[in-house]
Length: 83
Image 1 (tube, one colour):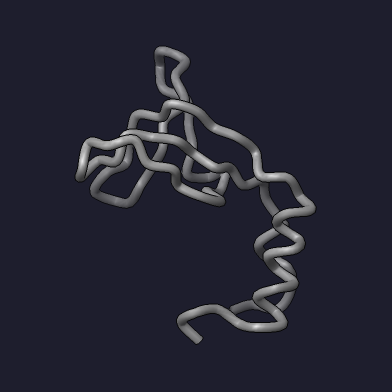
Image 2 (tube, rainbow, N blue to C red):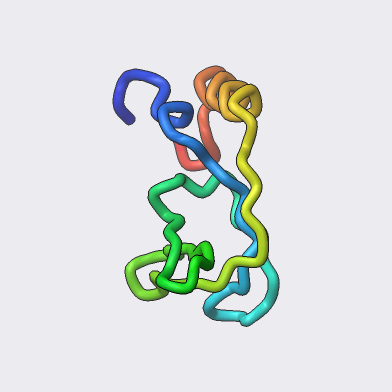
């Protein structure tokens, strides 16, 4: 973990997409803007990981900055589940 508020340095989005493994609609929370792109047809697509890098999206909603700030403060105070 680097010093500074990395969670709030870029825009994040909640992405409703077709899960590439299950084929079901799934909400992926706080996806970084670098995981979204527009294809040649003007559709927003989602890079799930290195294997599934062109996932169909249904909707993309920007996460408000105040929510990202609140998450960061919570993690600073209480840590994360993997610490």
